[in-house]
Length: 378
Ligand code: SF4
Image 1 (cartoon, protein in one colour):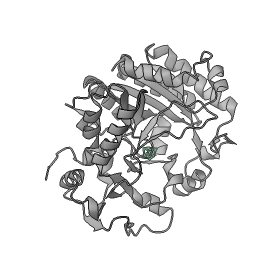
Image 2 (tube, helix red, strand yellow):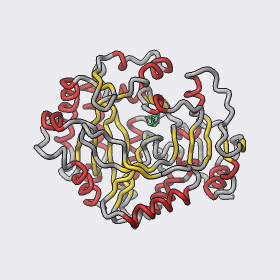
Image 3 (cartoon, rainbow, N blue to C red):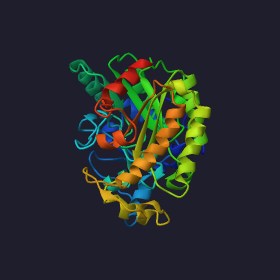
Image 4 (tube, helix red, strand yellow):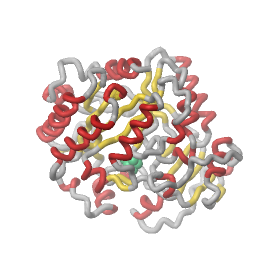
C-alpha cells in the first residue's frame, strides 16, 4: 500500500474531521481505495455490502447532516460522472460541465444548498476513477466544443484531497486536453497535491470569497481569507491560473465595507494577471433550505431578509438590492482587475447585466468569453 504523507490532519485540513470510513465491498481492491486507506490508518473502516446504506447512529434529523460530515463512504458511481451544469433557461448560463466526484463536504456553510438536497449522514466519494476517466475520454473523443469542467458542484473540489489524492489523477489526465480546462473550486487550502504536477495549463484553481464577516460566521470549518489567498499565491507560483467566485453575495450589516476589504486584500495579495475569471452571484436558495439551515444554525440572521421567488424556483433578493450589491462589487473589481480577466454574473437575466454596466450582448456571449479566458493563458 502507498503511504502518502500529505494527509497530515493540520488544523486547516477539512479531511481531519472524518471519523470513520465506510467501504462498499466491491470497491475494496480498487487502487484509489487502497491509497486512501493507507493514508488514514488511524480511522476505523467498516466494509458494507454494495448499495447498502451505512448504519450510522446519527440521532434525530437534522443532527444527521452534521454527523454526515464525519463519515466518508467510499463507493462506486453507477451513473454518469459527466453532465452539463443544470442551469436555468430564464437566466444567462455559462455552459459549465459538471464532473461528479462525490456528494457532501466536511466543511459546513450555513447557506450550503446541499443541505436541501442531501439527507444522508455521510459524504460519498467515488473511487471507481477508471470509469470516470473512461467516460471523460469518450466525451473528449466525440465532441468538438471547448469545455470548462468543474468538480465543485456537489462537493468541494479539494476539501478531502489530502486523503483522496484525486486532484493528481485529474490534473495529470487534463494536462494535454487542448479542448478543455478543469476548474478545482474550494474553500480549503488543501493544495499540497498540486505541487510538482505537470498540469499543462489545463487546470484552474478557484476559491470562493466573501466578506470577512460572512466567511467568519457563515462558513464553518473553512480556511480564512488570508489562508485562501496565500494558497492562491502558491498555486500561481506553481504555474496554475486562478479564479475567484463571490458567491453567494450576502446582504448583511457592513456589507459594503466587508466586500471592499476582501477585494482590496485579493488584489494586494494575488497577481491579477493570473486570474482567468471572477464570478458574482447574489444569494439564492431552494425553499427547503431555509428551515433546515435555520434549525441547524439558529443564530444566523441573513435568511430573515425579504426574498422573491425566482424563475428557477429559488428565492433571491429583490432586483433593486441585487443590482446594488453587484454594482458595488463590480465597481471595485473593474478598478483593479486585469483587462483579460472575465468578470461575470452567475445566473442573472440580461436586464440585470445591462443595469450593472455590461455592454449589450455580453451576457449572451458569456460562454465564449469564458472559453477565451481559459484559452488565453493555457
Ligand atoms: S464548502 Fe461548498 S460544499 Fe462545502 S459546505 Fe460550504 S458550500 Fe457546501
